[in-house]
Length: 529
Ligand code: NAP
Image (tube, rainbow, N blue to C red; front, side, top):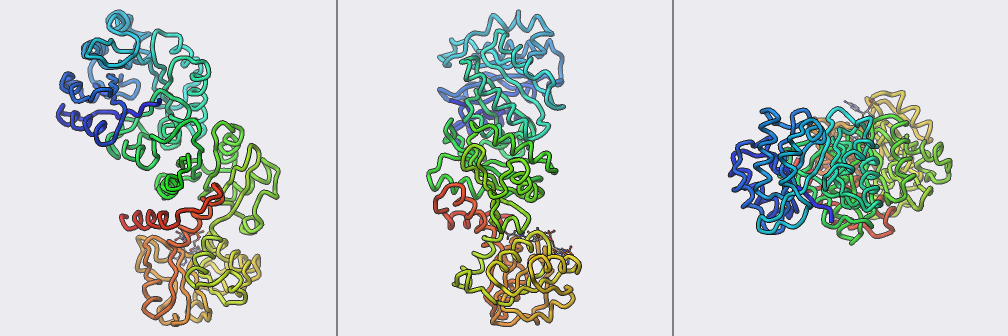
């Protein structure tokens, strides 16, 4: 079983005790790591007494050279670890560099250490975790370091480095897997930073010894550490195992994506053994190709589906065409839009590319209007905006036979989009003269924080119009508020957003998505912003 460990860093001792209690009792962590470098004056006996029966304790006093907060010299550090070992933690973590540099680390600590085992009334000696931490990037000699630690007299191998890219998670998984295959020493492999987060979440799938998290949000002792609450509740740590299938969202930036909060509860609700993780892939086709190609080459990762967001939607389409060489695997409308926001991994080497943005928009409209897509044939629609969202909406509307006029601030963009999809175009200044049954705002006007903005005046709205705002933050935009006052039927961007996620979920799982749950999550998230 892979342990979930909470790093304890707080001073004074009472605050650390409180965090230890909460880690085990409230959050159900399996282990705590007592970071004595952050709390050199902590009363170890008191800390240990807060650990419940069966809880695992690791102590360390991390060297500054390896990202620790230790302020004193090596002598005092080793003395602190020797004292700590006398309190019978389960493990003492010492850096490989310290172990090599200081002969007395081995001579003083060594006799106190033993094989790892259960904590049994203080009789058990702690095991040794030998570790390396590189905050500058991936060590060039990573494999040699792993081998050196494996060969040393320790019980657990720990390698930690700053992720250079999301592809570092592959190195983590390979190190974890090779330890298991050889039946060798358990391994902790961590790529720090946002790019490495998936390796922390998926440590249980690949049989790592443990993964670290913080007691609360923002209190991590290393970059990329998330809170135990998030790990347990959002990513369902306890349910992740070797057979867990993997889903995720590729984008940059990715930290504020709502998608993990939508898809993880949906997977849980449908009893699907799967987890959905954020994957920060830097801009550029090469980065996209290297990461997604890497996932496709590793069928043991069990990737089943990926959401693709800014700036990679065009790259996803290009990847299917060029790298896979299977242009037929791109949904025709996604090709017309020029963007794939959903990858479906059907089998090794078989990946389909879809665009669920247009489907999400159409479903939002037809649901509100209580009609079918073919009922939209010939309906006059004004689309305001000519950016990415507009492309998807216009493609969908034209697919249904709508008579579309595109208005945009930069008129040239309206013209070229209109030419591409067989629509009319007009400058934004003329939008107040529009005459349409459906009005769709695809500009960012009215989006937080500019909530007073609106793309057209209330005077141009008529009560028989359907007004659909793609903006979903805020949920009730000025445009929608004014449209409702006039008596228009209004459609919120939230519905489009939820629908595109529903379509992704159903494409990946072939199961009906728990739409209401997904909507509730989105509404809760947006309301709390
Ligand atoms: P985008 O590609 O950057 O396009 C932005 C559009 O807004 C362009 O047409 C731009 O006109 C126009 N615009 C921006 N500022 C303007 C201003 N001050 N006055 C007039 N026009 C202005 O962005 P996008 O990806 O299409 O996103 C647009 C909006 O749709 C965002 O609010 C986004 O959150 C929302 N969206 C919602 C969903 C959903 O699921 N509900 C999905 C995707 C997007 P120019 O061409 O003149 O710059």
